[in-house]
Structure formats: structure tokens, C-alpha cells
Amino acid sequence: MGAIVFDDILFDSWLTKKSDEILSKVDREKISTEEMLVLILKAQTNHFHHMDVEFRQEFKKIDERFESESKRMDQRFEKFSLDNDKRFDKVWSFHKWQMGIIIGLFAGLYLKLFLG
Image 1 (cartoon, rainbow, N blue to C red):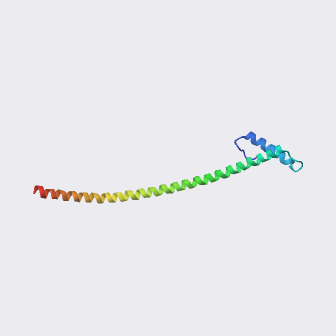
Image 2 (image 1 turned 180 degrees about the vertical axis):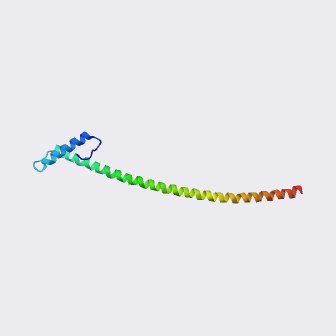
Image 3 (image 1 turned 90 degrees about the vertical axis):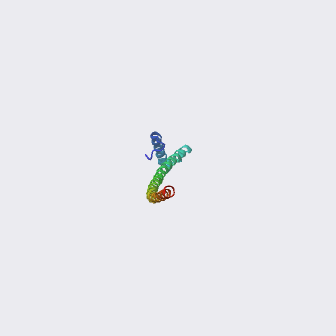
């Protein structure tokens, strides 16, 4: 029967049957313009079906590429985020010590100048 095109089983079965009838008489007798149009329509529906199959396969490949690239980018972002968190922790701990030293110096200077 062939591939079902346009989700119309009745149309496809009629077209297949009609094109088979016409093809069986092509070698024996001349076919009419209407019969030629039926054969062209059958060829076009077959072409549409094959193109649909090919496009779906290509779209599936593209989707797989996007998914793998998205996973790769997510991994890079997570690594970048972890690296930045570690850097921030190092800088923050260094600044805590700096602030502690500065507060200690100002407290000592305050005590020295104003109290004694």
C-alpha cells in the first residue's frame, strides 16, 4: 500500500490502488492526462513521505546535539560556579582577617589616644 500521507488512510489506499491500475496498463496502452495526474500525485505523496522521514531524522539529530551541548554547558557552568565559590571563600576569609587586624589597630589607637 505504501506510506500513509496527510493522515488520510482512505485517500492513500484509493491513490495507491488507482496508481497501480494505471501503472499496469502503461506498457500496453496510452494513458490519459487525468491518469498521468494521478501518477504524479502518487509520486509527490511518496516524495513527501520520504522527505518527512528524512527531516524527522535530521531534527532528531539536531535535538540530540542541542541536548549534549546543553549538558556540556551545564557542566561548565557548575564547574565555573564551584570555582568562583571557592575563590569567594578564600577572599572572604582573607578580608575577615584584614578587618580584624584593622579593627584591632583602631581600637588600640583609640585606647592609646583618648584613654591613656
